[in-house]
Image (tube, rainbow, N blue to C red):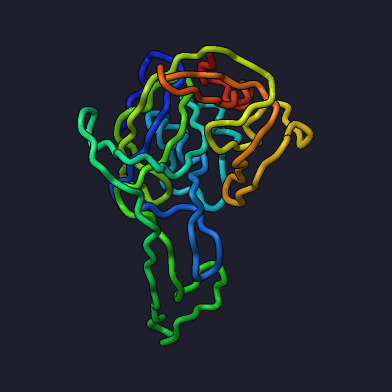
Length: 244
């Protein structure tokens, strides 16, 4: 279970997968993954102790509007890490280069029709799915608490470790900036396209902006060596997150 440290603040986080990671895909039958994890999946995972937002089965209807106002820790979207060292424990790391996506092929036969198709377009029985191998890692930022610990990520409940570094806030600014993380634009208060100087859109759930330069309220933080620029989330949408 993840820890919800009483100390609020901003943390640089690395989530390390300990099983094959499968999440939102692109394509039909021959599906692939983006290099990014949407922040809603991370938010549910690191707020595991809030029972009212955890559901064993909820159908296809999302409950973001009801749930996100209850969370205590906010997470930015995550990007695949290119770091040479991957932590296995608090004081132990190994050299590890992120491995390319692995593909799992499937060709199931319906026992009633003896065919590989059922006619249900959203559940094909032949195809290929992409997954990220174990020990690949992703970087994100957390606001409002320290999510370090063990989590289960996504609908497949993949076990992961989260390692964190506390950051010092040097300044809060509303100038143009280049975020140190992918951006979920629906998390920014009173945000409109005119605030975007440049961006690439990644179509997944939720849609993300990457390689972006925009104008919005943000934190300028440091770990003592590097600076990080982190977009401030909407305080109304994330009502119970203790924003610095």
